[in-house]
Image 1 (cartoon, rainbow, N blue to C red):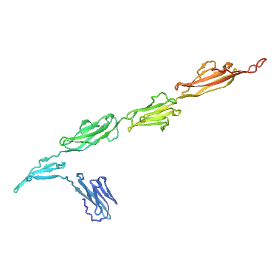
Image 2: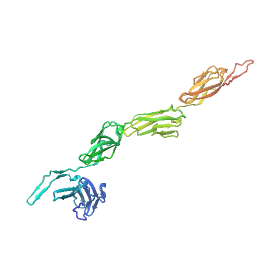
Image 3: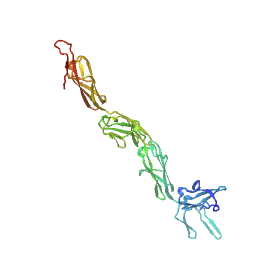
Image 4: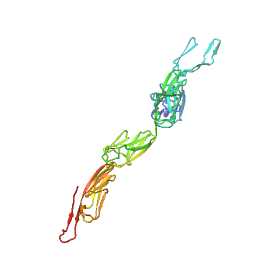
Length: 416
C-alpha cells in the first residue's frame, strides 16, 4: 500500500502514479490502469493512495505520485519499494550452522560469522562466498535486421542470450538440424536454401539444464529477373487451342495478367492455371488478338513481360470482282480477295486450263474463247486452310454489218 499524506476528501483534479519513468495508473475524471497492471491496482479516491497486489521481484524500485489539487499547488511524492524472495533460513548447532532452504540466485554473496563469549567477540572476514548456479532462463534470439524477407546475398547476424550462471553455452538449429555453436550465428552472403526456422539452445554445464528460444523465421528471396511470356504451342490460329507461359528467375510470389493497359478479364475460352503461370485459350477467336503482359512480383521487386498476339485465320469470304460480260476485243480485269491473316496467296485456273499465281487477272483483246468460268483459290500457308470462288464471264461479238451476216454473236462456254 502506497499511502499519501492528503487529508481524506481533498478535492484533487488528477493523480498520476509512476513506476520509475513509466505511468502505471492515472485518474483524470476516470481511472486508467496500464494493461500490465490490470487486476493488480486499487485506487483510493479519498486520499489518492494506491494498493499494488501480487508483488513480484520485478516490482522492486522507485514509485512516485503527482497530484493536481483544486485551488492549491501541485503535490508530489516518491518512495522506494523493496521486494524480497521468500527464503527460509535456519541456524542450528548453537548457531554454528547456517542452513538456507530453497536457495535462489538472490542468496548469492559473501557471508561472515561472529563468535563471542562474555569477555570477547570475533567476527570472521567475509571470505565465505556463496555462488548460486541457475538457468538458463529467458533464452532469447534476436536478428540484426528485423525484416519479413531478406534479399539473397545480404548479411544477417543472429544473437542468442539467456539468464544463466555460469554463462550459458549456445547451439544453433535450422529446422531442427544442428548448425554451429556460440552466442552468434553469422549468415554472410545468405542464400535461398538458408531460409527456414532458426532457434538457439542454451545449456548450463553446472545445472545441466537446457532451454530453447522461441523460433525465428528467416525468409531469403531472389529479386525477380528475366521475366518472359512465351508459348509452347504452335502459332495462334483461330479455332485452335493456345497457351501462354509466364516465367521468371528469382522468387515468384504473384503473377498478374493484363491485356493492353487493363487487367485481364477472362472470357469463356480462357483459363488461368498453375498459380497464374499459364494462360490457356480453348479455342482462339479473332477478338483474342492484342498485347498481353504478365507482371511477376515478390516483396523485393517486380518485372513485366509482353506478348503481342496475332490470331491467324482464313482465308474466308473469297470474292471475285470484275465484269460478267465483255465485248470481243475488249479489256477486262478480275480481282480475287479473301479475309485472311496473314494475307492469302491466290491461284487462278483459267478456262484454258492455264494456272496463274496472282490475285489479279488482266486481259487485252478479248476473244470468244476467253468466256467461261474463272476459278480462284485462296490459301493461307500458316493456317493451312484453302477457300475458293468461281466467276462466269461472257464474251459478246458485234461484226461489221453486211449481206448474209448475223448482227450479233455471243460466246459463252462453261467448263469444269
